[in-house]
View 1 (tube, helix red, strand yellow):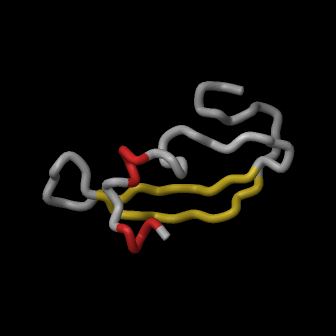
View 2 (cartoon, helix red, strand yellow):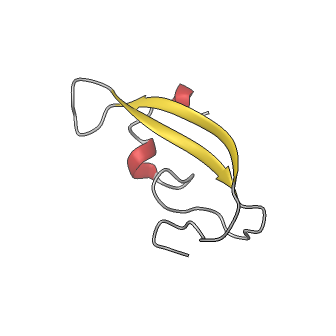
Amino acid sequence: MDESGIAGGHAYSLLSTHTIKIKKNNLKTLRPVHLVKLRNPWGNREWNGAWSDTDEENWSCVDDTVRQ
């Protein structure tokens, strides 16, 4: 497994894609962020890096209605 958390030689399923707009660092304009949701059928751990369920730094820049 590399530093991104992606395991080489594994097949991943693409579950969904989303484009959200965030306002970060007190900028006046929103910028788009493109997210993908993957599933590793052989995996037994959950992603805990950037944009994971527990990543408050990034998710705090997203409106609550979008987070759902």
